[in-house]
Image (cartoon, rainbow, N blue to C red; front, top):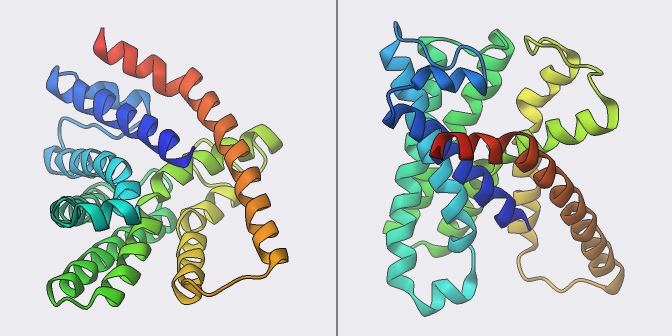
Length: 249
């Protein structure tokens, strides 16, 4: 369910944002978030465009790279997709950093710091995952690849978590200019918990777990799948699908 949701979001990013630029209507970006596209800031626009396009590729490729049978059956494919994944992660991270340095985020200094750290960590993880793979240090490569994947799903989780909060609590803690207390939490929350979960997964590895642990993990996955399905349906119906269809019209 997570991959399906991420794939729909990736299609929205590529078709809507890419289609707007291809059609010479970049100002349509501002339908998604005011201030994204400015004619007078071409470098910042190019940077955020690279961030979006690369982010879409990451969401599509990430789950494939983590599938063990695929890695073992087609190692050459894994290597080439891995190279594309690392390049895309670097482009996404650097593109986001370029936009922050050139324009700044809508949420101000705190969001600049939170998003800037996110971009820097993505570039770092991509570089280390690649360098360890080149040196055939596969355990270290796997660890940094897992951390990178945990980061790359952050942009998708950002939407999921905001949507879930809105369904449960409405506008509590939120503001139009992202200055609310919940907005302040979210500039870090959309990726730091992911990294913590990744660290637990890396350290646990294939260690055997007892029945209570397995049941708890299964229950967590089931609840997460239901919530993701609800949020994906909501976003697809209200935003992603209409904008995709509008871009294709």
